[in-house]
Every structure is written in C-alpha cells, then in structure tokens.
Image (tube, rainbow, N blue to C red):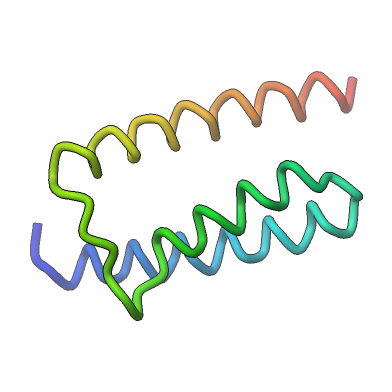
Length: 79
C-alpha cells in the first residue's frame, strides 16, 4: 500500500480512539478509557513510534481482536 494510506489510517485510528476514550470517560469506564488513550497515543500521526514491522503486526492483530471482543461485550450488555 502507498505511504499515504498508512498516514490516513493513523489519523483515523487516533481520532476514533480519542473519541472512544471521551465516551468511556463520560460513561465512567476508566480502564477502557485508559486503553483507548494508549491506542490513540500509539497511533497518533505526529511522532512515529518505531516498533518494527513484526511488532506492529502483533499490535494490529491484538487491537483487532480486542475491538471485536468489545463489540460482543457491548452488544451483550445492551440485551
């Protein structure tokens, strides 16, 4: 993929997790708020955090799994 794609993904991820952190704060979910802030900082587009390709792949997979699990947990909470 072109470099611009990755910059775009970093912007979208940082903004989305910043918003999710705000919502978690409003709902009193401190642990989830801290996790969202950490991800927003990790993906922020201003200062790159050099983790290496292998470690970034692990972070991406763990993040995707945790988001999928959180969707199921939130859907179960609504029922």
